[in-house]
Image (tube, rainbow, N blue to C red; front, side, top):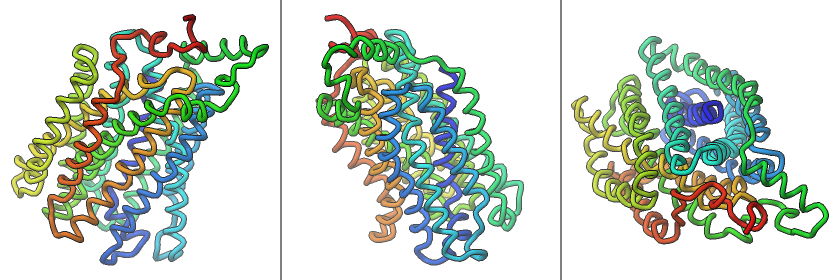
Length: 432
C-alpha cells in the first residue's frame, strides 16, 4: 500500500511543479509578452485534456490485466515526459518549436497520469479492511499533498539558493529532472506489489465464465461502466469536480495568485505555498478517520459549509502584505481542500462495483479533473484579467462547490461501513 501511494507523490509533483514555475516557463518557452502567462497555463491545461484519453486506455487495462501492471506502465511514461521537459531547448534557441515540444510532452504526461490517482485509489480502497478504507485511501490524498510540498519546497529552495537569472535559465530544469528520477524509481517498486482481492475475484469469475455467456464479463469494462453504472460515474464526476477546483485553486494556484495580485516575489509566494501543502498533509488523515467514524456524506456536508463560508475571506487574506495574515489565508484554504480529497479517495471508488471500478472511476474523475482542475487556474486568471476582480478565483470556486456539492449529497451511495465484498457485490463477484 505504501508503494502504491508513492505514485501520487510523483503525479502531483509533476503537475504542481508546472504551475509553480509557470512564470519562468512563460519566459523560457513563449516569450515574456502580455498574455504569455495565459498561454503557459493553457499548456498546463492541455495536459489535463489528455487525462480522460489515458484514463479510458488505462482503465480498460486496469480492469483487464491488473492494477499493478497498469501502474507500472504509467510510471514509465511519466518519467519520459518529465525528463523530456527538462532537456527542451528554450524559445531563444529553437523558436516556436520550444512551445510545440512543451505541449506534446505535457500531453504525454496527462495521458500517463490518467491511470495514476484513480488506480492508486482503487488499489488502496481494495486493500483496506472494512471501517478503515477512509483512512487507508486518504494516504493517497496525503501523498498528493506530499508531491505538492516536494514541488513547492524544492522550488522555494532553488529560488532562494540561485540567483533569479540562474533560476530562469537552468534551475527550473532540475525540478523536472527530480520528478523523472522519482518516476523511474517507481518501476521496480511497483513490480513488487500484489494484486487486490477484487481483481483476483474478477480473474476467477472470468475463468468460470469461459464456458458460459456472461456479456458483462466479456465486453469492455469501460462499456460495462457506462451501461450499468452511470449514476456512479456521475457521482464520481461531481465529487471530483469539487476536489479538483478546491485543490488547484486553494493550494496549487496560491503562489501564482500571490505573485499576480500582491506582487510578492517568487521566493515568498512559494514559501506560502509550502505552508498550504504542509497544513494539507497534516490534516488529511484526520478527515479520512472522520469519514470512517461519522460517515462519508456527513463529513462532506461539513466540508461544504466550510468551503462556502471561508473561501472568499481566505483569498482576501492572501493579498495582504502582512506575512502572518497571508499564511493564515493559505492555511484556511488548504484545510477543506485537503479534507475533501481525503474523503473522496475512499468514497469515489465505493460508488462502483468491482467489474468496472477502474474504468468507471477513470471516466468520472479525469473528466472532472480536466474541466475543474487543469482549466481552473486558466479560468481564474482570465476572470481576473477580464473583470478586474481580484477575488474572481474565490467566487468561481465557491459557485462550483455549491452547484456540484448539493447533488453529490443526494445521489452518492454510502458504503463506508460495508465490507469490500458487499461494495463489490454483484452476480459476477460474490454469491447471492
